Image (cartoon, rainbow, N blue to C red; front, side):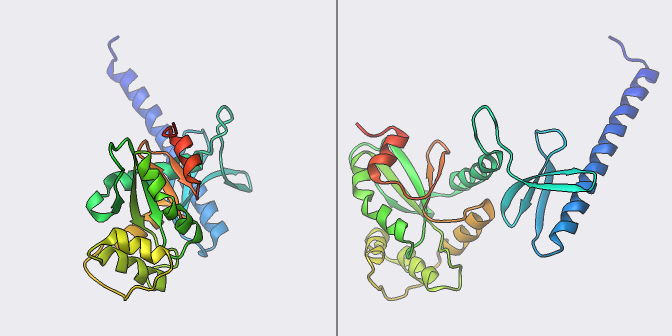
Length: 241
């Protein structure tokens, strides 16, 4: 169908009107949200969501769904009723998996699988985290099943902490695998420093929405928040014979 100049002008005007309305609605939601937050927490990003009239807000590195109607503001999670999946968690997990995908194994502490490497698992870890220590004790069983375990650093107490110093010491050791095991067994290793990726990994993990350790990222992008015993974990990813 040939579109004449008058028809094209009407279409353009309609699209312009829709875009203007969308922009005005976005700003209306932004103003409402900023007024609600009152500067106490940073609004990092606000975008339209796939749900009409609902917006996705990134606040303090967490994703929330926002809806404004008349004089009411709703902030929370949106769920897919068919699957029960949290849309906030889905997007958050995509950001975490993307971070892992962009990180070289040269910047990780890797515990290789025994024999054939069938799958790999990336773990955001903290030396002083009790469940991280429990998971680490099960690494030999995971390796024996063909699962390579890759560690990224996430000292929960932050950069200016003893946990940070401990994990930097591990990354800077000539044998970081042995240092990781010793440190997670409670040994106090002499602090060491070097050019290391720990701060970068912590800040990137925080920005991606890591909120606790251990956070496990399977090679298919699945994110598991928290510790699972080796047998359960291997069942979860299909490696238990």
